[in-house]
Image (cartoon, rainbow, N blue to C red; front, top):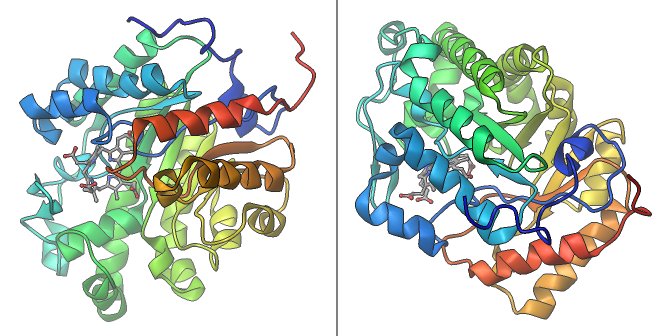
Length: 357
Ligand code: CP3
């Protein structure tokens, strides 16, 4: 693939994986959640010809789109192009990505009966296209650039299944959780089984790290998180941790949940922008790595303001091993590619250690 091996952009071996393990690095590794997406002209060109699900189902296309931001931005990690909702399809969920609307689930799960009917998933067969994309990407990535696999966390996926799509307040999800506790636990149990198998299979196919996206878990109080979500995240995180690769545990709006998320598991805890990185890391303790925490909207700011915000996060990380620079949530479609590139350059410009072999 053209452009992947430009010497000036190829980071030294394993910067991202070293940081996940809290080992010293020469420069802070950086990647962006949703780094392959509509803000990139190369992605839009593929999307003109193919739907999102088509890209996900054709490993060659998924691999190509995964590599686009690696070439364009010089990031230290690639995240597999897929969607957190893909494993719901073989469970029997009828879903669609409606233009301008986000995901729409035509068969929402609202009762014990609906949950009963969900099908078990044979990951190696039912999600073979994802695993094939993992193998293709790993074969094409330059060695120092890590490949990250991912899955949605049980709570976040349950919320899509129950709400039927995006939600502001998750009222139907909580209604089920508070009204039919056994049904809720049955749903989370089924999801945890599928997601653990799915992440383990991604690691076995060549993903060197995985991220568990609990994007909407910040909607829960600490008590509800502990009772209704955490045990299932624990199961998924334990299963994939046994495979060895580092695990990133991510959520948004989690300032009141950080310690509980750390206790659930993960080598790296994702931090959104609503809490300063240094305060979050202090609360978590420095025995865990952190990822974050630039506000995605900062990439829409004038360059000096953007750079000031990048520098502030690097200052707060203080050169301590175990910081991965990222946004606090996914990159916005309005983001100028130049701004994303400027962030990568700025992060890489700061030398952390005398460079050693
Ligand atoms: O580059 C990458 O990050 C890899 C690809 C990726 C996608 N979805 C592709 C995608 C990843 C990691 C995801 C994860 C995902 N999907 C999450 C967790 C991350 C987060 O943002 O919290 C969630 C909640 C979803 C569900 C989902 N998929 C939503 C809410 C939407 C619509 C939002 C929008 O921006 O329109 C999607 C669609 C989607 N998945 C897009 C992409 C690039 C954009 C739509 C498109 O290209 O048509």
